[in-house]
Image 1 (cartoon, helix red, strand yellow):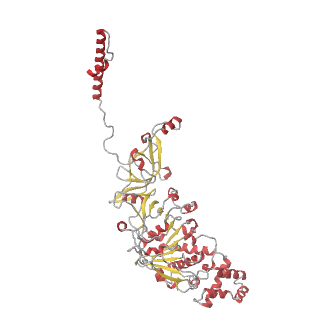
Image 2: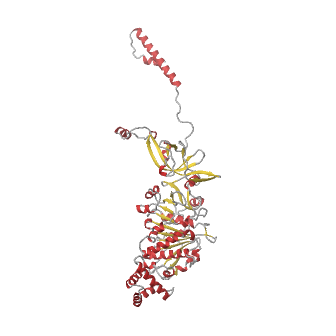
Image 3: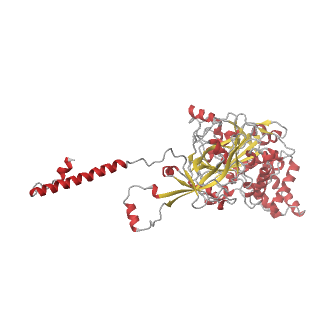
Length: 611
């Protein structure tokens, strides 16, 4: 205590003994106070105020604004308080689990995130604003961070098997909310099949969902067996995306899965048959599926094999090349076999498609006149009658007069038919190649890919005629009880059509009605006849509604056009994300397969793609 005494003896020149005694007493009293303070401090040691144990989960369910589960989702109130250490990792769309007391789990998704005041205060003031403008850090503890949850299902075990049911019970207040990280729980919660056709990896906001398993990603697959009905390939698929969205890349990856070794479908006679794929190709890209992708290294291939994803060039690929007078097909971008074909004019009669040469300009009366003239021509010339012979046939003035006087074909309708028939590209029919009608075993091969390139053709009208002619041959034989080709009839078939909006538009004319009617019937009979349409487009709004509404599975990549986005008819929560998706990101809406989800496709194409 001497040091304190020296410190308090600051005068140094006190008067008399009394002064010295007073100084000593003050020093002693001061020393006594210090001793008391030190003794008190020793009695009140500081302690760690952190709770024992470790936190688990992201937060807890809050009952502050109610806790309700209702049949009407709009009446459901489910909110979780997120603790400060977890807030930076929480995102809209993240999948969460909420436990029930009996070990069942509510599987839910974050649909809204919100900061709320921790203490009652007015933060819309000058003083508060200026104070915050001077601060460098944000104090999370000053605010509540609330997540609104959408319950998707209840997970439970039945005989050891994890199952799901509709949400039918409310969890307890204060239940700990955790992130769903188990692949089995997430797949069950979203009703994603364990096996089937691979489409991509599950994602949220463009980020791949990861688990603690190996591989850490969650594969999304399309039902491809008969346990719960027919394989969804025969319920038809739409791939929609704008230029640069990666839709061709995605389409190739999906089509390659249908050509995987061992994939078969059961026919009515009990046979298990590998599917054939026929793909119409406007940009000369799909024949590249014959070749391996040189960008895939050994590590990539091992990962694909581990995830059971078919990859590598498909050896049984044939480019079935339309032959048009005055054009040639370079075919330099792939190593697939090339087989030229022609469309015989007799196809117009044999497959009942006068609309192929009618185009969009004939009215109902003129279309009837065309039918009458075709019937008369083929009775006179037989099945070997050619397009040029038909033109000469129409040049006969006596025929025109005869049909007009008999009242069968008015002369104005006759002239309209003649003009229209002469206006189509004259190099389409009857060229120096085998007729498509004789190439059914090349066109459709179990386990084989047939690509029909049209990039080299002279006009959009020529492309339309070739595509519709070949597609009609396939569809007619598929739907017929007396088919011309048993090969086509008896083989499961995926019919792919890129730029589908150019061929299946819902225009109000005879040709459009005939074409749309044929494809609509094909779509309706797809499950029965093992025929799946695989439509690829950047303008889904232009596809005729009768065909569009038969499509069960929609893969929607980036679309910038509002009408296009609205037309695909996906849930609003996902619809809003479509314009912002990066290349390869997609929304999958397949009500008979799973809940609507976001996916990220493979970064590399499983076959050759591009230059």
